[in-house]
Length: 74
Figure 1 (cartoon, rainbow, N blue to C red):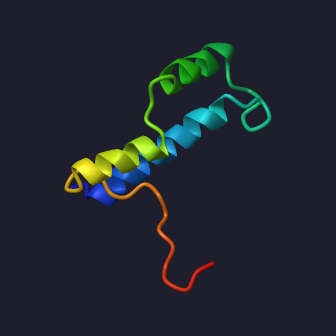
Figure 2: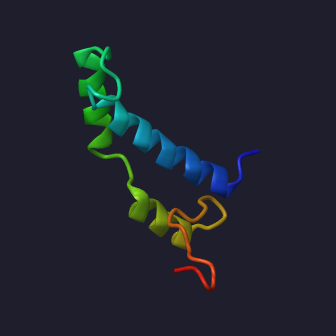
């Protein structure tokens, strides 16, 4: 069973991976069609603040997306 924090982490890591696919430096041998598909998917993919809003609205489905500072952290 997926817990909310795992679901959120998966969403954010998938976004990061799709963004990495766009970079020829990061992945030089990725075909152009794959880069274009990654770009197309990212166009409407949720970003961190959108996932955070989902967490606030339905915390039983999504974990927090933004790192909260612990007391005493600077």
